[in-house]
Structures are given as C-alpha cells and as structure tokens.
Image 1 (cartoon, helix red, strand yellow):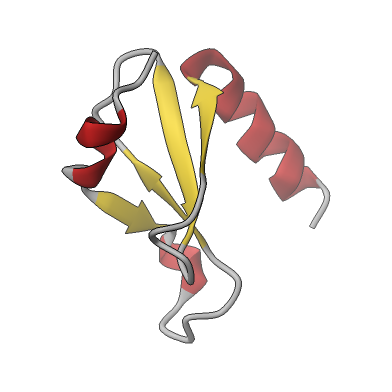
Image 2: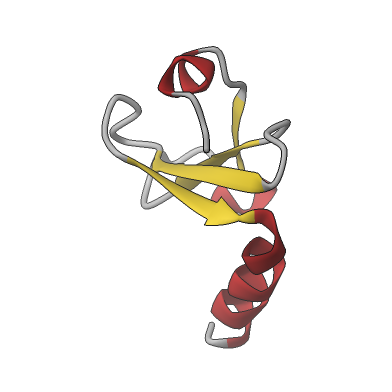
Length: 67
C-alpha cells in the first residue's frame, strides 16, 4: 500500500515525448517499491492511479502499440 503523504513528496516526471505544450500528459513518480503512481499533469492535486510495478511495463507497451 502507498502512503498518501509520500505522494506529496514524490518527484513527478512526464515523458520526453510530451513536449512543452502542456497538453494531454500523464506524470509518473519513481521510487515507490512495487507500484507506479500516475496522475494527470493538468491536475496535480487530483486523483492518482497506482499501478502494480509488474503491470506498468505491459500497460505502456500496449498503449504504444495502439498509436
């Protein structure tokens, strides 16, 4: 389980493919054991989705394949 206080201290990053347009981007936070927190870059105080780390790679690969 992830502690919500830890998310407040998280260092969030966007993909280098996002560019500088501040468009439809998601951010991920590294450094959480076993999980990958994901949020909407336009709403940093909004909800956070937490993926199991083992599911994150296949999820990203599937999204990329559907481009």
